[in-house]
Image 1 (cartoon, rainbow, N blue to C red):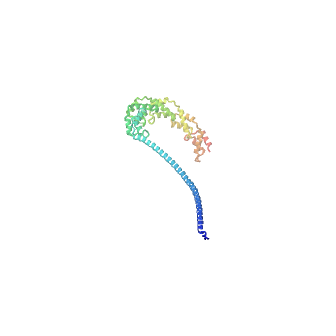
Image 2 (image 1 turned 120 degrees about the horizontal axis):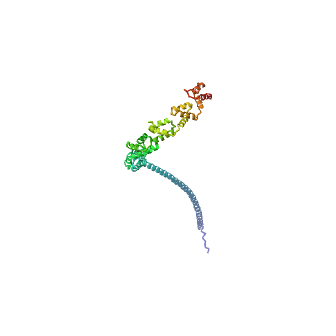
Image 3 (image 1 turned 60 degrees about the horizontal axis):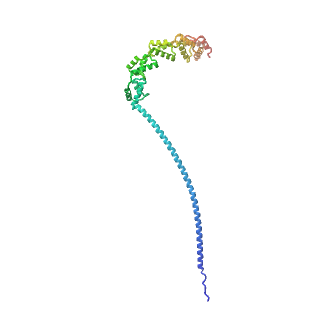
Length: 356
Protein backbone atom coordinates (compact mmCIF):
# COMPACT_ATOMS: atom_id res chain seq x y z
CA UNK A 1 0.00 0.00 0.00
CA UNK A 2 1.48 3.10 -0.89
CA UNK A 3 1.57 5.77 1.47
CA UNK A 4 1.67 9.43 0.44
CA UNK A 5 4.92 10.98 1.83
CA UNK A 6 4.61 14.49 2.97
CA UNK A 7 6.68 16.89 1.01
CA UNK A 8 9.78 18.33 2.74
CA UNK A 9 9.06 21.22 5.05
CA UNK A 10 10.85 23.99 3.17
CA UNK A 11 9.61 26.55 5.58
CA UNK A 12 11.43 25.04 8.51
CA UNK A 13 14.53 24.57 6.50
CA UNK A 14 14.46 28.18 5.49
CA UNK A 15 13.97 29.26 9.05
CA UNK A 16 16.86 27.18 10.26
CA UNK A 17 19.04 28.56 7.49
CA UNK A 18 17.96 32.04 8.42
CA UNK A 19 18.76 31.47 12.05
CA UNK A 20 22.20 30.17 11.16
CA UNK A 21 22.83 33.23 9.02
CA UNK A 22 21.66 35.44 11.80
CA UNK A 23 23.97 33.74 14.25
CA UNK A 24 26.86 34.03 11.82
CA UNK A 25 26.16 37.70 11.21
CA UNK A 26 25.88 38.34 14.90
CA UNK A 27 29.26 36.70 15.50
CA UNK A 28 30.74 38.72 12.69
CA UNK A 29 29.26 41.91 14.07
CA UNK A 30 30.55 41.11 17.53
CA UNK A 31 34.01 40.45 16.09
CA UNK A 32 33.94 43.74 14.26
CA UNK A 33 32.69 45.49 17.35
CA UNK A 34 35.42 43.90 19.42
CA UNK A 35 38.04 44.90 16.87
CA UNK A 36 36.74 48.48 16.87
CA UNK A 37 36.64 48.47 20.63
CA UNK A 38 40.24 47.27 20.75
CA UNK A 39 41.27 49.91 18.27
CA UNK A 40 39.42 52.54 20.24
CA UNK A 41 41.13 51.42 23.41
CA UNK A 42 44.51 51.60 21.70
CA UNK A 43 43.65 55.00 20.33
CA UNK A 44 42.50 56.20 23.72
CA UNK A 45 45.67 54.89 25.31
CA UNK A 46 47.74 56.71 22.70
CA UNK A 47 45.80 59.91 23.20
CA UNK A 48 46.14 59.61 26.96
CA UNK A 49 49.91 59.35 26.54
CA UNK A 50 49.93 62.41 24.37
CA UNK A 51 47.76 64.30 26.80
CA UNK A 52 50.02 63.26 29.68
CA UNK A 53 53.11 64.51 27.87
CA UNK A 54 51.41 67.80 27.09
CA UNK A 55 50.26 68.14 30.71
CA UNK A 56 53.72 67.31 31.99
CA UNK A 57 55.34 70.01 29.79
CA UNK A 58 52.97 72.69 30.98
CA UNK A 59 53.41 71.57 34.59
CA UNK A 60 57.20 71.61 34.34
CA UNK A 61 57.10 75.12 32.84
CA UNK A 62 54.92 76.31 35.67
CA UNK A 63 57.25 74.70 38.17
CA UNK A 64 60.29 76.49 36.67
CA UNK A 65 58.47 79.81 36.73
CA UNK A 66 57.45 79.17 40.31
CA UNK A 67 61.05 78.43 41.31
CA UNK A 68 62.26 81.63 39.62
CA UNK A 69 59.62 83.66 41.43
CA UNK A 70 60.60 82.10 44.75
CA UNK A 71 64.29 82.86 44.15
CA UNK A 72 63.49 86.43 43.13
CA UNK A 73 61.40 86.85 46.25
CA UNK A 74 64.28 85.53 48.36
CA UNK A 75 66.74 88.00 46.77
CA UNK A 76 64.36 90.91 47.32
CA UNK A 77 63.79 89.81 50.88
CA UNK A 78 67.52 89.63 51.54
CA UNK A 79 68.09 93.10 50.07
CA UNK A 80 65.27 94.55 52.10
CA UNK A 81 66.63 92.84 55.20
CA UNK A 82 70.10 94.24 54.56
CA UNK A 83 68.64 97.69 53.99
CA UNK A 84 66.67 97.47 57.20
CA UNK A 85 69.72 96.22 59.08
CA UNK A 86 71.87 99.04 57.67
CA UNK A 87 69.19 101.59 58.51
CA UNK A 88 68.85 100.16 62.00
CA UNK A 89 72.64 100.32 62.43
CA UNK A 90 72.76 103.95 61.25
CA UNK A 91 69.87 104.83 63.50
CA UNK A 92 71.57 103.12 66.40
CA UNK A 93 74.79 105.05 65.73
CA UNK A 94 72.88 108.31 65.39
CA UNK A 95 70.97 107.61 68.58
CA UNK A 96 74.21 106.75 70.32
CA UNK A 97 75.72 110.07 69.24
CA UNK A 98 72.60 111.88 70.28
CA UNK A 99 72.74 110.17 73.64
CA UNK A 100 76.40 111.20 74.01
CA UNK A 101 75.63 114.79 73.05
CA UNK A 102 72.60 114.79 75.25
CA UNK A 103 74.68 113.50 78.13
CA UNK A 104 77.11 116.31 77.76
CA UNK A 105 74.64 119.00 76.84
CA UNK A 106 72.22 117.90 79.49
CA UNK A 107 74.90 117.45 82.11
CA UNK A 108 73.54 114.13 83.30
CA UNK A 109 76.97 112.77 84.17
CA UNK A 110 78.17 114.97 87.00
CA UNK A 111 80.86 112.50 87.96
CA UNK A 112 82.49 112.74 84.55
CA UNK A 113 82.41 116.52 84.71
CA UNK A 114 84.05 116.34 88.12
CA UNK A 115 86.78 114.02 86.82
CA UNK A 116 87.56 116.38 83.97
CA UNK A 117 87.57 119.35 86.31
CA UNK A 118 90.13 117.56 88.49
CA UNK A 119 92.36 117.04 85.47
CA UNK A 120 92.16 120.71 84.53
CA UNK A 121 92.85 121.81 88.09
CA UNK A 122 95.63 119.39 89.05
CA UNK A 123 97.39 118.72 85.75
CA UNK A 124 96.84 121.93 83.80
CA UNK A 125 96.77 124.33 86.78
CA UNK A 126 93.71 126.21 85.58
CA UNK A 127 91.74 128.77 87.51
CA UNK A 128 88.26 128.03 88.84
CA UNK A 129 86.66 130.26 86.22
CA UNK A 130 88.86 128.80 83.52
CA UNK A 131 87.73 125.28 84.44
CA UNK A 132 84.08 126.31 84.37
CA UNK A 133 84.51 127.91 80.93
CA UNK A 134 86.22 124.81 79.57
CA UNK A 135 83.46 122.52 80.86
CA UNK A 136 80.69 124.61 79.33
CA UNK A 137 82.40 125.73 76.12
CA UNK A 138 80.80 124.71 72.82
CA UNK A 139 84.30 123.89 71.59
CA UNK A 140 85.14 122.19 74.87
CA UNK A 141 83.22 119.70 76.99
CA UNK A 142 79.69 121.08 76.42
CA UNK A 143 78.34 120.39 79.89
CA UNK A 144 75.52 122.62 80.96
CA UNK A 145 76.02 125.29 83.59
CA UNK A 146 74.53 123.37 86.52
CA UNK A 147 76.76 120.36 85.87
CA UNK A 148 79.84 122.57 85.49
CA UNK A 149 79.02 124.41 88.73
CA UNK A 150 78.62 121.09 90.50
CA UNK A 151 82.05 120.00 89.26
CA UNK A 152 84.00 123.13 90.22
CA UNK A 153 82.25 123.40 93.58
CA UNK A 154 83.06 119.77 94.49
CA UNK A 155 86.77 119.91 93.65
CA UNK A 156 88.94 118.97 96.61
CA UNK A 157 92.54 119.84 97.50
CA UNK A 158 92.91 122.52 94.84
CA UNK A 159 94.98 125.62 95.68
CA UNK A 160 94.24 128.21 93.02
CA UNK A 161 97.02 130.47 94.24
CA UNK A 162 99.49 127.69 93.53
CA UNK A 163 97.81 127.11 90.18
CA UNK A 164 98.34 130.77 89.32
CA UNK A 165 102.00 130.49 90.38
CA UNK A 166 102.64 127.37 88.27
CA UNK A 167 100.83 128.90 85.28
CA UNK A 168 102.95 132.04 85.60
CA UNK A 169 106.23 130.14 85.66
CA UNK A 170 105.32 127.77 82.81
CA UNK A 171 104.01 130.51 80.52
CA UNK A 172 107.05 132.65 81.25
CA UNK A 173 109.36 129.80 80.26
CA UNK A 174 107.50 129.25 77.00
CA UNK A 175 106.40 132.74 75.98
CA UNK A 176 109.04 134.94 77.66
CA UNK A 177 106.58 137.50 78.99
CA UNK A 178 107.43 140.79 80.58
CA UNK A 179 106.03 141.27 84.07
CA UNK A 180 103.23 143.47 82.75
CA UNK A 181 102.34 140.96 80.02
CA UNK A 182 102.33 138.09 82.49
CA UNK A 183 100.03 139.90 84.88
CA UNK A 184 97.55 140.60 82.08
CA UNK A 185 97.80 137.01 80.89
CA UNK A 186 96.95 135.53 84.29
CA UNK A 187 93.99 137.84 84.67
CA UNK A 188 92.51 137.83 81.21
CA UNK A 189 93.55 134.87 79.08
CA UNK A 190 90.42 132.91 78.19
CA UNK A 191 92.02 129.48 78.59
CA UNK A 192 94.95 129.71 80.97
CA UNK A 193 94.06 132.86 82.90
CA UNK A 194 91.08 134.37 84.68
CA UNK A 195 92.59 134.03 88.11
CA UNK A 196 91.42 136.44 90.80
CA UNK A 197 93.48 139.53 91.65
CA UNK A 198 94.53 137.92 94.92
CA UNK A 199 95.71 134.78 93.14
CA UNK A 200 97.60 136.82 90.53
CA UNK A 201 99.29 138.93 93.19
CA UNK A 202 100.41 135.76 94.96
CA UNK A 203 101.83 134.35 91.74
CA UNK A 204 103.70 137.52 90.78
CA UNK A 205 105.18 137.77 94.26
CA UNK A 206 106.43 134.20 94.42
CA UNK A 207 107.26 133.41 90.77
CA UNK A 208 110.94 132.90 90.09
CA UNK A 209 111.28 134.68 86.75
CA UNK A 210 114.25 136.51 85.23
CA UNK A 211 112.64 139.24 83.16
CA UNK A 212 115.97 140.38 81.74
CA UNK A 213 116.46 136.95 80.22
CA UNK A 214 112.88 137.06 78.96
CA UNK A 215 113.65 140.38 77.26
CA UNK A 216 116.74 138.85 75.66
CA UNK A 217 114.83 135.80 74.34
CA UNK A 218 112.11 138.10 73.01
CA UNK A 219 114.66 140.28 71.27
CA UNK A 220 116.22 137.21 69.60
CA UNK A 221 112.84 136.08 68.34
CA UNK A 222 111.85 139.49 66.95
CA UNK A 223 115.21 139.95 65.25
CA UNK A 224 115.09 136.53 63.62
CA UNK A 225 111.55 137.01 62.35
CA UNK A 226 111.46 140.63 61.22
CA UNK A 227 115.13 141.62 60.59
CA UNK A 228 114.63 144.71 62.71
CA UNK A 229 117.12 147.45 63.29
CA UNK A 230 118.46 148.00 66.80
CA UNK A 231 116.29 151.08 67.24
CA UNK A 232 113.13 149.26 66.14
CA UNK A 233 113.91 146.35 68.42
CA UNK A 234 114.42 148.54 71.48
CA UNK A 235 111.14 150.29 70.79
CA UNK A 236 109.30 146.96 70.43
CA UNK A 237 110.67 145.73 73.76
CA UNK A 238 109.69 148.79 75.79
CA UNK A 239 106.66 150.45 74.18
CA UNK A 240 103.13 150.23 75.56
CA UNK A 241 102.00 148.80 72.24
CA UNK A 242 104.88 146.32 72.35
CA UNK A 243 106.20 143.92 74.97
CA UNK A 244 106.40 146.40 77.86
CA UNK A 245 109.73 145.42 79.37
CA UNK A 246 111.48 148.01 81.52
CA UNK A 247 114.29 150.09 80.04
CA UNK A 248 116.78 148.27 82.23
CA UNK A 249 115.54 144.88 80.94
CA UNK A 250 115.62 146.09 77.32
CA UNK A 251 119.16 147.48 77.74
CA UNK A 252 120.28 144.12 79.09
CA UNK A 253 118.74 142.41 76.09
CA UNK A 254 120.37 144.69 73.54
CA UNK A 255 123.74 144.39 75.25
CA UNK A 256 123.69 140.61 75.15
CA UNK A 257 121.95 140.17 71.83
CA UNK A 258 124.26 138.63 69.27
CA UNK A 259 122.74 140.09 66.13
CA UNK A 260 124.53 141.55 63.12
CA UNK A 261 122.34 144.53 62.23
CA UNK A 262 124.18 145.01 58.95
CA UNK A 263 122.88 141.62 57.89
CA UNK A 264 119.40 142.58 59.07
CA UNK A 265 119.63 145.68 56.87
CA UNK A 266 120.76 143.55 53.92
CA UNK A 267 117.84 141.13 54.39
CA UNK A 268 115.44 144.06 54.40
CA UNK A 269 117.08 145.46 51.26
CA UNK A 270 116.68 142.13 49.47
CA UNK A 271 113.04 142.03 50.43
CA UNK A 272 112.45 145.55 49.10
CA UNK A 273 114.18 144.92 45.78
CA UNK A 274 112.08 141.87 44.99
CA UNK A 275 109.12 144.15 44.25
CA UNK A 276 110.67 147.47 43.26
CA UNK A 277 112.99 149.09 40.68
CA UNK A 278 114.60 151.59 43.03
CA UNK A 279 118.00 153.19 42.71
CA UNK A 280 120.75 152.56 45.23
CA UNK A 281 120.18 155.99 46.75
CA UNK A 282 116.43 155.37 47.12
CA UNK A 283 117.08 152.05 48.84
CA UNK A 284 119.61 153.63 51.20
CA UNK A 285 117.17 156.37 52.20
CA UNK A 286 114.39 153.87 52.86
CA UNK A 287 116.58 151.77 55.15
CA UNK A 288 117.65 154.82 57.14
CA UNK A 289 114.43 156.82 57.25
CA UNK A 290 111.83 154.08 57.59
CA UNK A 291 113.67 151.17 59.20
CA UNK A 292 116.00 153.17 61.47
CA UNK A 293 119.18 151.42 60.43
CA UNK A 294 122.39 153.40 60.88
CA UNK A 295 123.98 155.01 57.85
CA UNK A 296 126.77 152.46 57.96
CA UNK A 297 124.29 149.54 58.08
CA UNK A 298 122.18 150.99 55.25
CA UNK A 299 125.24 151.59 53.05
CA UNK A 300 126.41 148.03 53.63
CA UNK A 301 122.99 146.74 52.56
CA UNK A 302 122.73 148.96 49.46
CA UNK A 303 126.23 148.00 48.35
CA UNK A 304 125.76 144.28 48.81
CA UNK A 305 122.22 143.60 47.75
CA UNK A 306 122.03 141.48 44.60
CA UNK A 307 120.51 143.91 42.12
CA UNK A 308 121.51 145.46 38.81
CA UNK A 309 120.87 149.19 39.24
CA UNK A 310 121.43 149.80 35.50
CA UNK A 311 118.56 147.43 34.71
CA UNK A 312 116.44 149.13 37.36
CA UNK A 313 117.12 152.46 35.63
CA UNK A 314 116.11 150.96 32.27
CA UNK A 315 112.84 149.61 33.68
CA UNK A 316 112.12 153.01 35.19
CA UNK A 317 112.86 154.66 31.83
CA UNK A 318 110.44 152.34 30.05
CA UNK A 319 107.76 153.34 32.50
CA UNK A 320 108.45 157.05 31.94
CA UNK A 321 108.36 156.71 28.13
CA UNK A 322 104.95 155.03 27.92
CA UNK A 323 103.11 158.28 27.16
CA UNK A 324 105.30 158.74 24.06
CA UNK A 325 105.72 162.49 24.67
CA UNK A 326 108.80 162.41 26.92
CA UNK A 327 112.15 162.79 25.24
CA UNK A 328 115.15 160.67 26.10
CA UNK A 329 116.90 163.77 27.43
CA UNK A 330 114.06 164.48 29.83
CA UNK A 331 113.94 160.83 30.89
CA UNK A 332 117.66 160.88 31.64
CA UNK A 333 117.28 164.06 33.72
CA UNK A 334 114.44 162.52 35.76
CA UNK A 335 116.41 159.35 36.35
CA UNK A 336 119.54 161.13 37.62
CA UNK A 337 117.99 164.12 39.38
CA UNK A 338 118.37 164.45 43.15
CA UNK A 339 114.71 165.33 43.25
CA UNK A 340 113.91 162.42 41.00
CA UNK A 341 114.96 158.77 41.10
CA UNK A 342 118.60 159.39 42.10
CA UNK A 343 120.26 156.96 39.69
CA UNK A 344 123.89 157.72 38.84
CA UNK A 345 124.77 159.43 35.54
CA UNK A 346 126.16 156.16 34.26
CA UNK A 347 122.99 154.23 35.14
CA UNK A 348 120.75 156.91 33.58
CA UNK A 349 122.80 156.97 30.37
CA UNK A 350 122.64 153.16 30.14
CA UNK A 351 118.86 153.35 30.45
CA UNK A 352 118.28 155.86 27.61
CA UNK A 353 120.83 154.12 25.36
CA UNK A 354 118.91 150.83 25.64
CA UNK A 355 115.46 152.37 25.54
CA UNK A 356 113.53 151.27 22.44
